[in-house]
Length: 168
Image (tube, rainbow, N blue to C red; front, side, top):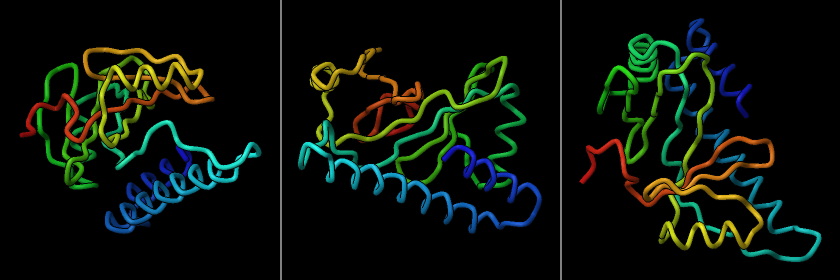
């Protein structure tokens, strides 16, 4: 999925894709990925399964970037994201609705984590369920993190999360 998203960004940068086409394709990619995971869960070899959680949306994506102002300008210019909050170490940009892009200054670029909004999210219960599922959750305040099979970090949150802080 990362390579496909990267190709879309390169398409926008080169002018081969409009911003609207890239957003449409990213949404389609995310929906297909989510649907694929749901289909796998439903056709498990041990019979129908109940998911550990019910995701109600992709809340945010957090990137490691080497230059916050440069990245802020890029996402503003090419995707129309608006800055919610910025410091020398991070930047949070609105991605529409309750969704946002978080960027953290780092030595090398990459995906830091991504976060799903969970129906009826409770941090203590999330940790318990992840433990029961054989995963190794880490709790930081009301945020709960765990890794997927490839070591990509996921975060779980409620509808608003606990940042970027400009939410009701």
